[in-house]
Image 1 (cartoon, rainbow, N blue to C red):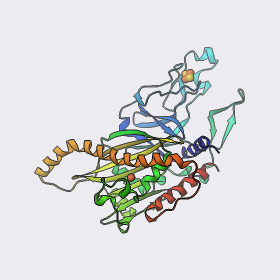
Image 2 (image 1 turned 60 degrees about the vertical axis):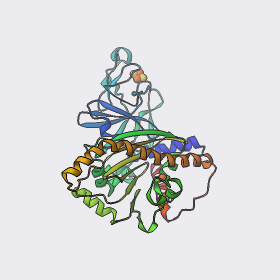
Image 3 (image 1 turned 45 degrees about the horizontal axis):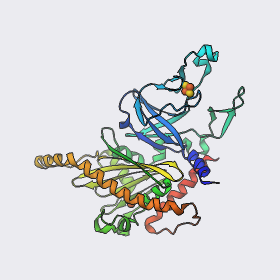
Image 4 (image 1 turned 135 degrees about the horizontal axis):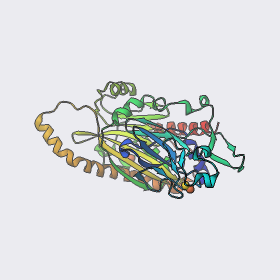
Length: 387
Ligand code: FES
Ligand SMILES: [Fe+2]
């Protein structure tokens, strides 16, 4: 299979896996929407009062995109012939419907393809229903996207709710990314396949070589201080101090008394990570996602904000100083994050050049085991979708 085709089928399969689409802070008000990617195509997520819905970004009439900008706030109305859809994705307003189509909008029954949505804290996830076959339209003789049928969920990952999919990571992500945060955001396009960008976040071995001035001790990490919890298909990296295991972090987050003591990363399959790291006196949370554009380019999106964990008691004076520093801190945290990610991106862009001609397996050391775990999860997700 050629690379573009392999990419398309990979993305179609991963579109059925719970995928981060955006943050609820991106759509705070009624009718706010964002455009995002899922399964290799464009989708959009919109707020309708208290509920959040997602749809494929393709009008059912003649397939014009419903959303032609990255974000906005208005009704679901296609610009081409002004078909209007309700929050169920049904075409309810069709100009001259009876005259031109011989039926009412309800009788016509056109609807947008639905994206299943679930949230964990401010994180909005989406996935498409499992596609196994298409019925053909009896009059036109063509398959239509509204007529996908769904597989028996008991045989696939599709029966897992978002909470089940995230497993022990669910209470942690909910605590780290809870409502009330106000994140900074940046995005950049990297000329590399999204898996290279994910894999570089799954190992620390490169830190001394690629980030020698960005981390303490020249980027050297003691492998004996590293701990790698696996909660399939996801994994984590804990370093130094009282390591604890994932279940104790989960229990502390659930009880609302988790206090970060050292750097930690949770890598959530397929394509994002959440970490907490210390910036002066304050713990910051960073979310980084590698969103595939095509087989050799990726948009890397990142959000960062002060960690919403309960703080230990501090003196009045100390709080005043911290408050002053907090005004400037996001600026410096943003610069630091961009420096580190740029250093990674240079490596990934160089690796993209020979990537298509490499067929062997890599030689993975003790600090790189999580790459093998990611690859296992990846092939499993692809196999499940083809059942
Ligand atoms: S293509 Fe959307 S209304 Fe015609
Ligand atoms: Fe790195």
